[in-house]
Amino acid sequence: MSGIDPLAFIILSTALGTLCAFVLFVLGSGLVRDINGLGHWGAACITMAAAAFLFALRGTIPVFLSSFLPNLLVAAGVIAMHASLTEFGGWEVKRAPLFLLAGVAGLALTWSTFVQDDYRVRVIIMSSTLTALFIACARLIIRLKEKGFAERLTAFVFLATSVVMLARCLAAFFQDSGLTLNTDTSLVHSIYMGTFPFSLVALSVGFMLMVNRAMQMKLEFLATRDQMTGVYRRDAILSLLEQTLVESQLARRPMSVLIMDLDDFKDINDRHGHLAGDRVIIDFSSKVLNILRRGDTIGRYGGEEFLVLLPGATKEDAYAVADRIRTMAREVSSKEIPAYTVSIGVASLLPGHTDSVTLIDVADKALYAAKKAGKNHVKLAYHPL
Image 1 (cartoon, rainbow, N blue to C red):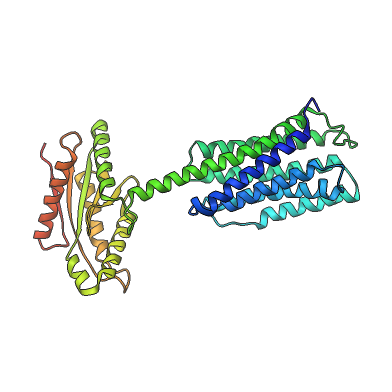
Image 2: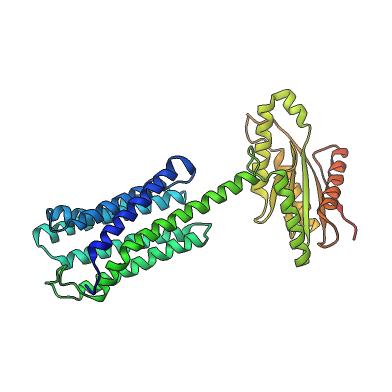
């Protein structure tokens, strides 16, 4: 086979697949429990390793164990990868379509193995099945909202492997019916034998990189977010304010900030208890998040005080957003949440004329004016040029 030793590749893929499975099971059992899909991918690696081990024993064990079963195990392994990626992406796992495909392939494989022994037909069946499965896995990665190098690499390997499988299917389709494993010396078969084991390992490495990236994002989220509400913490929102201000100055575009304070919050805690007060803070944060545009940001500035960044918003835009927040805040959303209102100070200016400290100070003065006006008000301030 053009100097390629199939047994060496099979042994190598068995060892590397087992190692990948071990790493994934360790990660899933203790280090990254919040990341979904590790168990299924680890099972996929074990399944692939078992298939490779059985393929290596060809000629010494019955054909059921050396050919039929390992072919099904390979398909089952890719299905497990698909389930893993589905869980990783947070989607509902729908196994029926893929298991139906595997079932049809299994029936066809049974016929071409035990009823009418035909290596060429088996290659066509398995190659076409795996082509479809690899493409299905690549599509899941492409659907992910957040994609970096790891996701693009893994999707590329899935697609490249599907191309090799499709080429193998087409090559077998146009070859003689008497084709056997020993007489299959085509270039496509050699490429398949040389790349398939490494593709499986590359896919596992890519998935582990995806897991690592997801874990980094989660740690960054936990480091910058308020634990109760999920909005940015004070230090994080102030850092974002500095960054937004610089970007606005460079782009010469307006920006606005809102400082919002829940009215009479101490009375809410005293009358209804601190648990009810926590529910008010969570409810208010949720309402604001539903109102804000994409690119707007909210952070918890103090206990019941919040800071909102509105990049690109004029004073009219900012006032409109603030008034929507004020109106929605007083709408009762649950019997478990006491009625409450909010006062809002708005600071809006052209970029390049102030720093973040001054901007917050102007907004804070507007908030004070809103409180002085009787609370449940929005007051607009404008930093002088």
